[in-house]
Length: 256
Image (cartoon, rainbow, N blue to C red; front, side, top):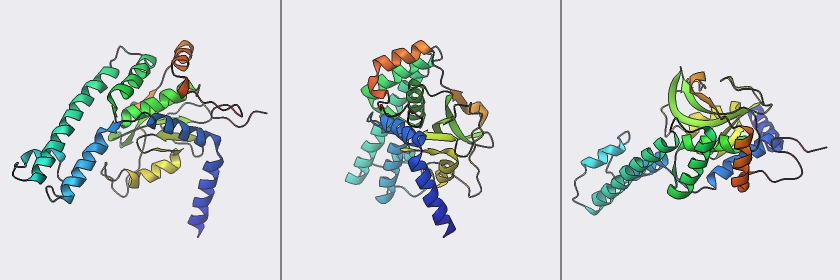
């Protein structure tokens, strides 16, 4: 009973918290750019192949290349695998383009938005970066992208993260302060709550042990850096990514 009460209290608090509501708004803005996730596409193909008896649980999607084209099922799966390879190849080129070291964060944001619109392919890293860029465009201070880690090793998932009080995020989660925006999972919440949920929501994509503790290693945390002019130009170019509510400021309580 106590756990149920705590769950209700958590849901009630986050529902009232304007910062969580605004973080969810950012999450929905990222997903308003319709796009395919390479990781999710791979999982869909794997699940379908397993359901049709072409692969066993635990096999790689690349094992599909060993199928012989002797049936309608195999021919269809081989076409799916070919489509997947094409998407991966295209995505690799796209990712290399916007991650050029010569690009500042503002130019990378501009390039990424165009790629979302043109190619409609992204993954958690792109979703996290765009969420952080949108938050920064709305003048949130100290916004970061961060990779989930365990013992300083990457777990293969990236999010947007920041402290709602505007302080710097150094990898330490502060309860009821540190917020995660995760457009890939279509979730936004306090990091202390969402990090616990990852063990179930990401179980099909990351191998977790029951005792694993999800962390954010400093070396995989990146601050999104916009100048004042960067923010002005991006806000002017993408007005639909600017929070429009006269009752209060973004991430803040109601104005007096």
